[in-house]
Amino acid sequence: MNAALKFLPHEHLKAWLEELAGTMRVLAPQKEGAAVVYRAFDPSREPELIRKPTESAKHILFPRSEALFAFHKKKAPFAPDSLNPDGSQAEKEEPATPAMELTPPEQPGPTVVFGMTGCDAGGVTTFDPVYGGRYQDPYYLQRREATVLIARACNEALSTCFCTWVGGDPANRRDADILATRLENGWLLEPLTERAERVLGSTLLGDAGEAEAREAEALHAKARAAIGEAPDLTGIEDALPALFDDKDFWWSESAACLACGACTYLCPTCHCFTITDEKAGLSGVRLRAWDTCMAALYTLEASGHNPRGQKAARLRNRVGHKFAYFLKNHQGRISCCGCGRCIKSCPSSVDIRRIVLNALKRAKGKEAANG
Ligand code: SF4
Ligand code: SF4
Image 1 (cartoon, rainbow, N blue to C red):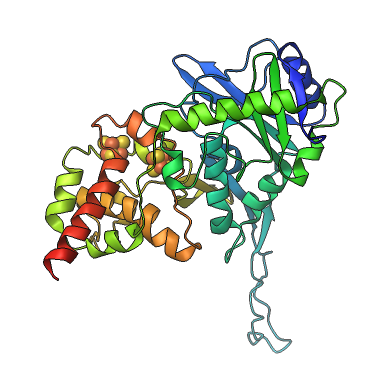
Image 2: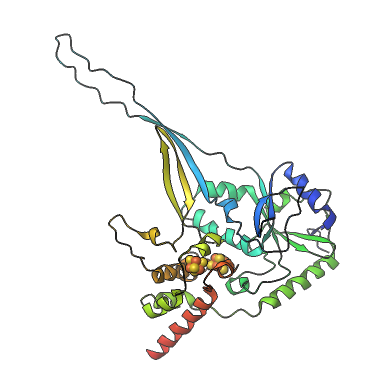
């Protein structure tokens, strides 16, 4: 028996989340129309813990739009021209620089996300080296530290799921703080990091035994088998740059793309943003909002030149960033967690798995042809 494992009977789930909501912000997947979205836990409703959320969980740590700070410009006080006693103009003092008041935004306090998919937890840890590495983003880091991620193991896999291709797993122990597995009679909670201690002190939780651990492992193995064997992606980080100038390849792969951007907005690992100042009078807010490299305006320069004016170039950048450039910058980590949302939601059936496999095949073919 593993003393660290906890067991929560199904009938106690809502009571436990309600108890947590007394001291922290609790989020869980919730049905909203035809979609499943991460929302504040509502005790009057059942969280949706079977269907895969339509959106990813990234907005919890990286909001769609957020105020970085509010600003208010204070005008310099009026300083009349002054004259010397003999009537001549006195030497002017340097005008006072107008003062700028900056007000930081309020940040959410302690938070727990219950029931995120393992791939969504993988999305979060893909963000970590971007916003917590060479460049430290205090907004992201504050939320990251305050948030406990409870990933639920996927007992079923969709035909679009491919987490195992990119280092993930339906029972993702690498990226979450707690792994929760839905068993027949309740949830098995496996703490994985120190953050887990913040939420596992409840008397509603009991200790779990070997039987529960075995039941969970059998479910995990079934989900892995449903995804099937992962292809070998070794060399993809070289294959994609090798095809950079292969216009035929990128035109063909991007032919169906409508440039709607759904793939990037739903993606748990896409992290581009734009910054604007919204100003009225002397006050305003500096805003950061999600942006998408699949949009033509993303790279439009003030001169009118656009280095990625064609959708083929934009798709090349999106796939290249996830499966080549990111790996080189971040110790071999692929910037895709295999959630499959971009495949499921693409109106034109553009499939990133197919592009990656085609790229590997084409680059190998070219290499062989060149001897
Ligand atoms: S979702 Fe599909 S059509 Fe829309 S931008 Fe992405 S690849 Fe293109
Ligand atoms: S690229 Fe597609 S499959 Fe990969 S993480 Fe983004 S949405 Fe999911």
